[in-house]
Structures are given as C-alpha cells and as structure tokens.
Image (cartoon, rainbow, N blue to C red; front, top):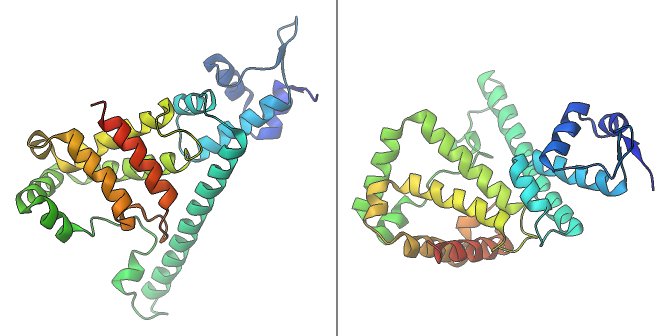
Length: 254
C-alpha cells in the first residue's frame, strides 16, 4: 500500500495542509496511520475518500452533508461516481449553453448579430414559474395570487436566494441517486426542499392547507408530469421517482 504524508497528499490533491488537518479534526478524513512522532500518513483508501469529498464540494455540498453521505450505510463508491458523472455532465451542458448565450448577447450588443429572441436571451437559465395558468386551474386564483404577493413583498435579494437555494437542493439530490430516498443524508436535503417550497407558497397559503397532503401532491406531480423534473432540457424519470419516494417519506412524518 502506498503511503502519503499530509504534505504530499495536499500537493497531489491541490488542497492545503491546513485543509487536511481540518478534515481530520472533523472526522471527515482521518489518516490511516499516525506515527509515534504524530505524523499523519494516508493510504489508497483515504485517497479515494478525499476524491469523493472534493467531488461533493464541487457539487456545493457542505462538509457536514458530505460526512453524512460518506458515512451513511447506503454509500457505495462506484454508485457515487456514476452519480457524480451525471451531475457534472449536466452542469457542463448547462454552462456550455450559458457560454453560447453570452456570446450571442455580446455579438448582438456590438451590432454584429440580429437581435436575440426572448427565448435565446434566457437560454440556459433555470426557468421560472411557466406553469402559472395550470397552478391557477389546480389550486385556484386566490392561492396563486397570495403566493405571488408574498414573493413580491420579499424583495429581490431574498427571492434570488430562494431560487439559488432551490437549484442547490435539486443539484444535491441529483447527486444522491445512489442512496436510499429514506436515508438521513437525503432526508436532510428534503427538509430543505420542504422549507423552500413553503417559502414560495407563503405562510397564509400553508396555514390554509394540510401541508403533508399538499407536499405529497407535489411529489405525485413530479411523477405524473415529467416537465416538473426536466433537467437541462431532458426528462429524468429516475430522478422523479427518487424525489417522489423521498418526499412522500418525509411528508408521512410531518
């Protein structure tokens, strides 16, 4: 087995020695051996775990969330790598689309290209609520208007944060498809998802409804209507089924 000092591992992985010391203190990445002189030595197993940590950090997981995933009973390295691959490919595709959008906008502003259509102008960005009409038909005009009024009062900074949180949660869950929907790590993200949904709906709406049933209804919607789980222009039945099971499990414990 190869052994790496903390300095060599830091150089190899492109992180600082201080970072590895911090991971050790958190119990996130412990050395395989501590010599009598208190030197840390890392083996192949620790190299793989560090790679997983860096992958999850790239996907915006917190260190607490990463530890919960890696130490969970359902964790499997090969399955995790497949999930990382899909999540990163999805991000790559979206970033490539955004780069094209930027280039088109630059050429338009320079007068070197015909004006962008509205669709081109926002291509690659997460879509807003394109289902307002359907929401009114399903929940009624009053419910939708109350939610919209709540968002208007919220202000741009808070609304932007809500949208950013929404994207971060979706990305985190997409990277957890190799875990059980009922696992602690997944349910932590679902709790964030539930809180995010409540913020979008507004407290007046939430107080007037049975939220467990409403959340189950939303979970079913992800199964019934593939548009609600489209990621980068493609439907993802596996993600929809995973999200549905995780949400129903959470709702039944509210």
